[in-house]
Image (cartoon, rainbow, N blue to C red):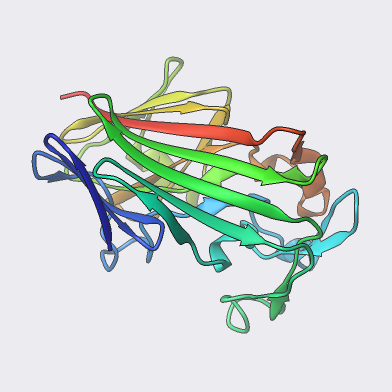
Length: 259
C-alpha cells in the first residue's frame, strides 16, 4: 500500500488504484468489498465501452485488435516509479501485439488473450495540494496511435438524497440508476459537483465529457471520458478514436471538497 498526505488530506493507493481519499476523516472513495463494484478506480484504455457485439474485434489504422470491454490497460500491472510525501507516480508499459490474458475469460468472454497493435507507456500520478487531489495521466506512444481514455473512480455515498450537477443541468441518483449499464452521458462538460453529505467538485482537463454509472445507492462512478461509446455501434468503435502526436497526451482530474 502506498500512502501520501497533505494537511488534513490522506490518500491510499493499492498497486496504482485509488482506494481511499479522506479529508478530516471523511471517506470519499467507494470501499472495495462494499456493494456495487469490486474496484475503487481503474482506467479505460485504449478504448471505452463493450465490444462483445463486435466479437471483441476493434478496427485500427494498422490492424484489427482484440479487446474486451474498456480495453486491456486494466489487465496490466502498475509499477511505482517515484514517491514523495505528497505525490506518487505509477507507470504501465505495453509492447505492440503482446498477448495479455483476459480476466473475463471464460465466464464473461470468449477471448482468452487480448492484444493491441501499438506500443504505449501510460503514467498515472497522484498529487495532493491545498486545492485537493489531482490525478494526472500521461500517454506516450507511436505517432498516430489511436486511443480513447476514460477514468473510472467510484465515490462512496453517505446521504439518502444525492445529485450530480453540471453548469447546464442537475441529475439525481435515481436517474443514473435508471439508465443502468449503459451509463448516463454528460456531454461537453468538464466539471461536475457531487452533492452528497459533503460536496465534491470533479474538474477535468483534456477529457471533454463524463459518464455516470451505478447500480446501487451507496456509490457512484463519475467517469471523465474522451468518447461516449454508446453513441456508435460496437463495430464502429474506431469512429471515437483520438490520436497520439509527437508529444505525450496529458489529462488531469481535479477532486476537491467544497465544504
